[in-house]
Length: 298
Image 1 (tube, rainbow, N blue to C red):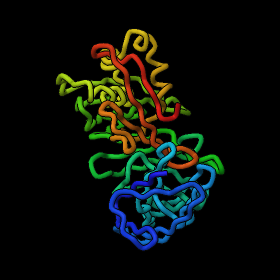
Image 2 (tube, helix red, strand yellow; image 1 turned 60 degrees about the vertical axis):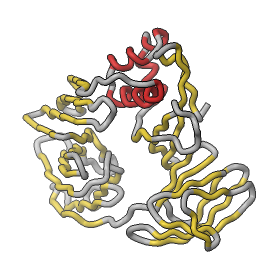
Image 3 (cartoon, rainbow, N blue to C red; image 1 turned 135 degrees about the vertical axis):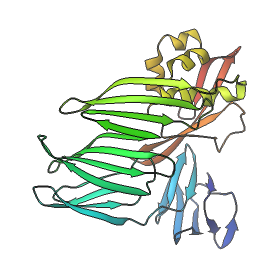
């Protein structure tokens, strides 16, 4: 197994590691790290192809390989507010966390610098608006507060987020190859939000080379850009775009693949119940059309 390191200084058995180290079947290695916020000590074992790590570390699994990085900590108390059934406290760290009269924790769409709570009344269950900012975008989440059943109703990031009555309009500028501007509208229907419109505009429609096609495809899937997908995909794929969306699922991050030398490969990162997982895709072409997709999960 190959294990790449990033965002800190790492030492394996006392020796510094710049890029990666290996772990053989049955092997055990002691790993220390120094990050921007803290340092730590870890024990790595590989048993029957399964990586076991003792100690806390950021970890993304890349099939039979892995990537490690210092964990993000530093949860801080933000505010306390009255809900009608007791007080609730809001905390922000790697997750957004509520405790007190209602409890809930979840990882936001992006790391947040600020977060403020506003409780709305007049609904069957209390509705909590959380507004904040990441490094580059505004943030909004709408929570339904219920004893033992609190949940996120809507969560969005955008250059601008406008709330008028029961409608929310989000404008997002994506830092992708097409520099997309996406305008989405959501309407509150009394129990859930319904997306009523989704307008995708490409502000940079430059020609692309074959090495860009895979990334363009994943960016189009993430943006739900039907026109771009039809330009990129063979007729067979383009006839059933919902199957294409289902195949890739929710994409948390598009990135360069770590463990391949292919010039046409691209990777995505997803959050799963078993932690962060990265999947690498590569593509076959006829002309400029993608006719086959290979996945590292296959």
